Length: 126
Image (cartoon, rainbow, N blue to C red; front, side):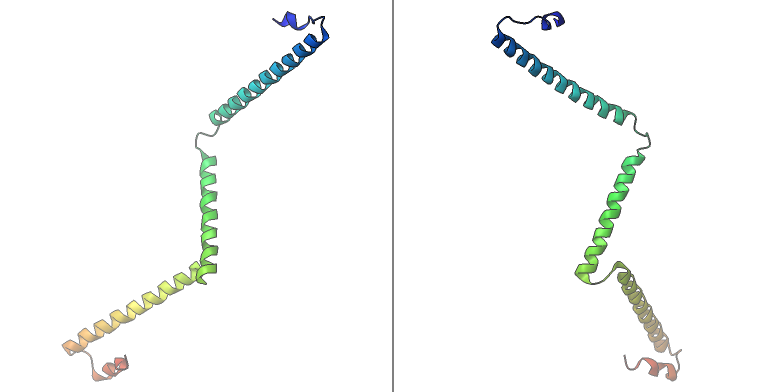
C-alpha cells in the first residue's frame, strides 16, 4: 500500500485531489493516534499513582479547608460574630447554668433549714 503513494497521476487535477485526500487521511490518522496516546497516558498515570491515594486525600482536605474558611467569612459578614464569639457565648451560658444550679442547691438547703438567714438575703433581688 505504501508503494502506491510514490506514484502520481499524469492528470494534474486528479493528482491534486489525490494529495488532498492523502493529507486528510494522514491528518485523521494522526488525530486518532494522538487521542489513543492521550488515553494510554491517562491510563498509565492512574496505574502509576500512589497506592495510598495521598493525592486525592490532600485534594479533599484542601476542599474542606476552603469550605471552612468560606463559611467563617460568611458567618462574619452575615451574623457579625465570628466562631470565636460563639465560644464566648457558650461559656456565658455555662456560667448561667452553674449559677442556676447553685440557686437550686441553696433553695433545697433553705427548705431543709440548713441555710442561715444571712445567706437568704443574698438572692432576694432575683
